[in-house]
Image (tube, rainbow, N blue to C red; front, side, top):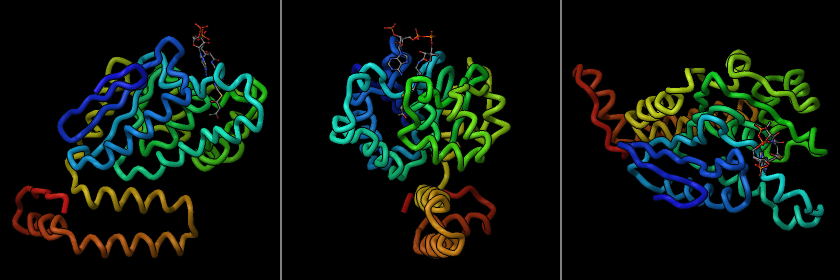
Length: 257
Ligand code: CAA
């Protein structure tokens, strides 16, 4: 499936979704975001897709929301557009999403990266929330997700100065899973996606859901949620198969049921 704003490739068990606005460093305009959300929701319903890789190109994952599209807007325009509400739908995608990031991941690009479940970054990655430099502030989760990921003082510095951090800093701060040479960042992300795609799909979905729940609830509520998901997996054929295969010392064959 190919069109002007996104390119989607399918590989065994995984899908790769690539932003296609290289001339503006993959700035996230409303049309691209609408298409992205629709695409992710469609892939989420596809049983053959067990992990999604979201990527840009070597120079930019995404340089943020499209400034030219927002520049002349009034507060009421922004209220009616409610463009960031669309982003909440990405959070509800049950299939794991890995961001394969290289070059700039700024503003909305950083926020989108943080909405993904894991991040493979190239050595040339530069991450930041530079909205302060254009008279605004993060609007798609930056003040919340960045703070939870890196802590108050580092988030405060990034949000209030707009400065960028390097891939190695992002690794040290726990914002990305791994940093690899730029030539292989997409291949590494695909390899991680294939590994996840090889796991029992129902368990993967319920486990993702439980990890995400930790951001929205108390420890008690989260533990209760985890326990229910754990118990629920005993209703799956994959649980019977996985444990039986272990006992019989053979490789399990997952049905996704
Ligand atoms: N929106 C629209 N266009 C953008 C863009 C953006 N966020 N970022 C880059 N572009 C465009 C540039 O205007 C330029 O287009 P033209 O060739 O037509 O002039 C093209 O992409 C290439 O960019 P540069 O020439 O600026 O490239 P550079 O290598 O010199 O600089 C950069 C790269 C430092 C990333 C610089 O482009 C930049 O600062 N971009 C803006 C980053 C930013 O402020 N992002 C936050 C946006 S607001 C937001 O995201 C709100 C939110 O919370 C969701």
